[in-house]
Length: 135
Image 1 (cartoon, one colour):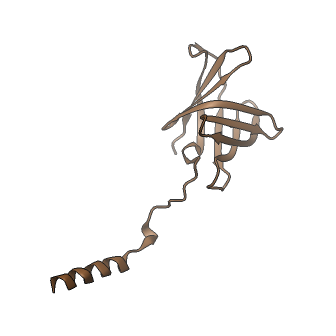
Image 2 (cartoon, helix red, strand yellow; image 1 turned 180 degrees about the vertical axis):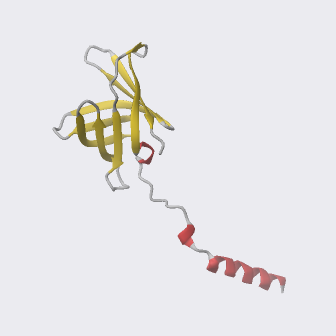
């Protein structure tokens, strides 16, 4: 009798499960990047501060969960729009502007802080530190 009650309880539990309360598992690979970022500082060779303007970077996805691509808008003294793609193996992000100019950065993402590193032709390295705006 106990086995039958246990079996009945197990069947009732399985049948009554509602999957509509499950968390949305359809998350984009770029989800941590999506949002609005504000430039906090810019360093030359990891030591010399460089002057910065107020810059805002808006990152959105491209409505595809199967890639590491999205769109961006850079708002500064001018405005620039385009697309970007991530290379997770080499931790790089390539921004492609509407005029097809491409710029590739190494990146480091830690919570709400995004660091973008670029090495110039003369060997100098510039690091931009961005902070995500929390709504």
